[in-house]
Length: 72
Image (cartoon, rainbow, N blue to C red; front, side, top):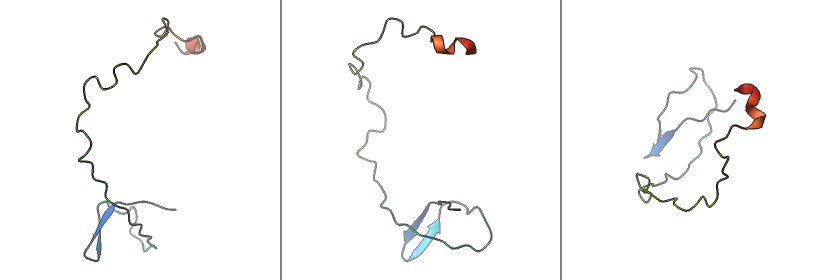
């Protein structure tokens, strides 16, 4: 069984950010990934960003589907 736990590596030491799911001794594999910076992304969606993306919507879009009649 493999379980992933987040942690950080600094100055030769690994610090776990989550509690391991077990107390017994187990083999550990360490994978290093780069920390992604998200400061280039806008913090909130831009109003009207997707305007014009939907070019057509059928007139019966809100009508119940025939396939789901048994569940209604």
